[in-house]
Image (cartoon, rainbow, N blue to C red; front, side):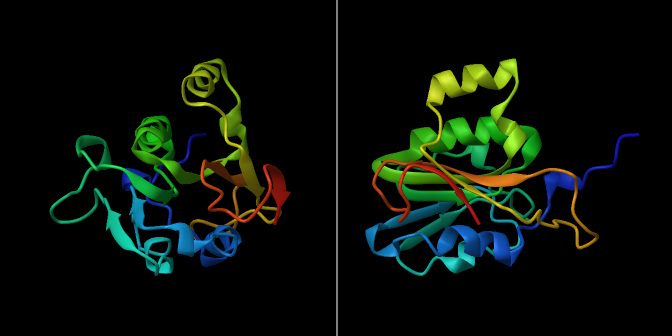
Length: 168
């Protein structure tokens, strides 16, 4: 039985999940930040270092990330709508500065499938992962049966972790 999805795939990111990434970010290396899908602002509000920009389709005057030209950013972080995560990711990788960092919260099984094999060949694989050992609850009604991780493309060593897989 399929479950009904929230409009725009709106599933707010728990603060503990945001903390698992942000405790490793060297914000002194960040001059510009973008959150492509701000939702309730828990990620956006955690940034206090620089010029901040966001998109959010649910606003009264929608700021649809996929329909806007955003420029280049040092740090791009989001929990994307899963149904269009690949499109978001392609765009973010292009909008990331040469010494920047992109971090996306995704299901670990996002790594699989023939379709996404082509994505990885196109954009490259993340050089860092922060695997969440505790499954997050995005609805407040318990967790789903899926593991999550921060998928990180860190070109400028903005994340204070060595390349590889890290478990929080």
